[in-house]
Image 1 (cartoon, rainbow, N blue to C red):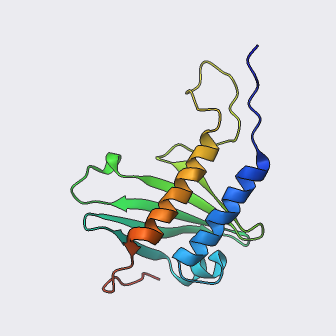
Image 2 (cartoon, rainbow, N blue to C red):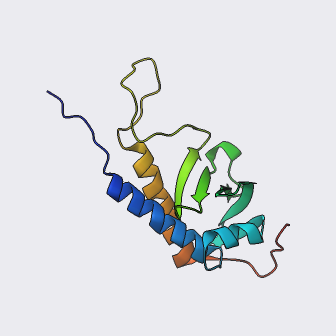
Length: 151
């Protein structure tokens, strides 16, 4: 008998809280809500040939959606990373809600053979990917001085 996957909610929430705090630091504010409201676009240069654009897509009372897109002029657009992150300001959590155009990510996927196959912990893996991306930005990223914020 195959053991049923049960997500570890404490681990998922802890990761989302750490990602939210990291976004606040990355965007240069005391909390992610202030940072997201301050500017609508930020460019983060990582190395010589890799950059990421962070654009505020939508804002509501308790949430902000940020689109993170890899900026690489020599790479085909479909090969560039693109994900949508939702910041939950009331819960102080951040999570990926769309990755490479794949929406409606859930912690559990029904066992339906007619749907696209997903990993049992795919949403957690994507949020761990977000944590790794944030770590990369802190270690190697910088905001170019000539970059102008778009308001």
